[in-house]
Image (cartoon, rainbow, N blue to C red; front, side, top):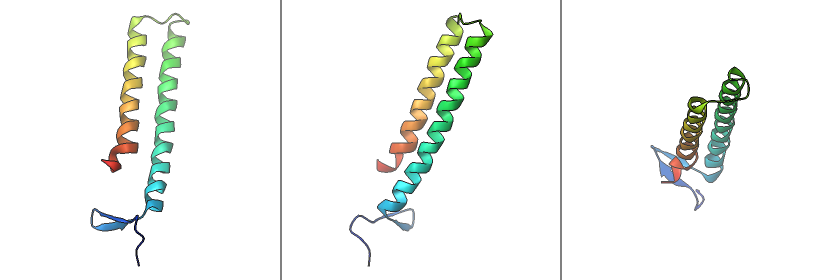
Length: 80
């Protein structure tokens, strides 16, 4: 007997509990991405003696956008 919030995806029945477990593991990946992003920004800062030039600022923004898109696709991809 299946619950009403169970649905069929990729040849298997998926419950909401399974869905939230995968979401939690994806959130762990997002934390890793954010940590890498922070490290890259700090490395750029230290290499320029706390006076980052335009290139490092642009790189930090680009990495932030990339990681946000990865986060968005990872977390919300299953619901579209």
